[in-house]
Image 1 (cartoon, rainbow, N blue to C red):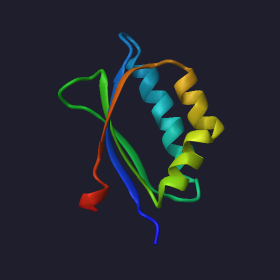
Image 2 (cartoon, rainbow, N blue to C red):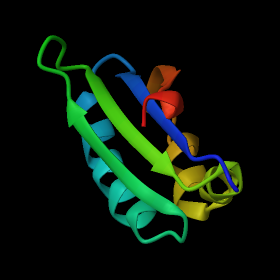
Image 3 (cartoon, rainbow, N blue to C red):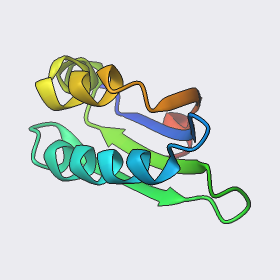
Amino acid sequence: MSTPVCKLVRIKAQPGLADRLHQALMVLETATRREVGCVEFAFFRALSDQESFVLLEHFVDEAALAFHMAQPHTREFFAAQLVASVKAIDVSAVT
């Protein structure tokens, strides 16, 4: 039996790039939701900090997450260098 991967991720934009990061996250969300192995992929702008976003990602297993990270849309997202920091919490045990 495979172990699901579920993470809560805080993403902070590079200074002054929050709106561009928001647009890039919308593109990434749409593409990721179509991936085999993606159960949930949704982001929200943080209420406490307009430069930050919260992402909930849930994949059926580590292989599905690895597949996601190798996809062109994921690589393009990170190559754009809009992200200042990423902090992830594994919440797989909670699901």
